[in-house]
Amino acid sequence: MIAVIIRIALRYCAGVLVARGLLGADDAAAFSADPDIQMSLETGLGLAIAATAEWWHVLARRFGWEH
Image 1 (cartoon, rainbow, N blue to C red):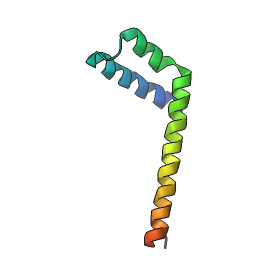
Image 2 (image 1 turned 30 degrees about the horizontal axis):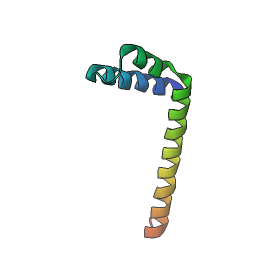
Image 3 (image 1 turned 30 degrees about the vertical axis):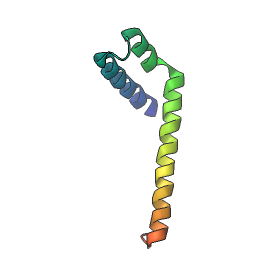
């Protein structure tokens, strides 16, 4: 399911970049359809969510919010 969401987000991002003239249409199609890019974005997003959760836990312990 997350791959579908990532693919949709990539298409919207690629569309914005094409509209701004930063990418050509062929580059945008390759960018949004490449499974390697999708996998790296999923991994990066997962790491960012995990880091945020861990940082929130550190703050909760430091300020006594976990009780």
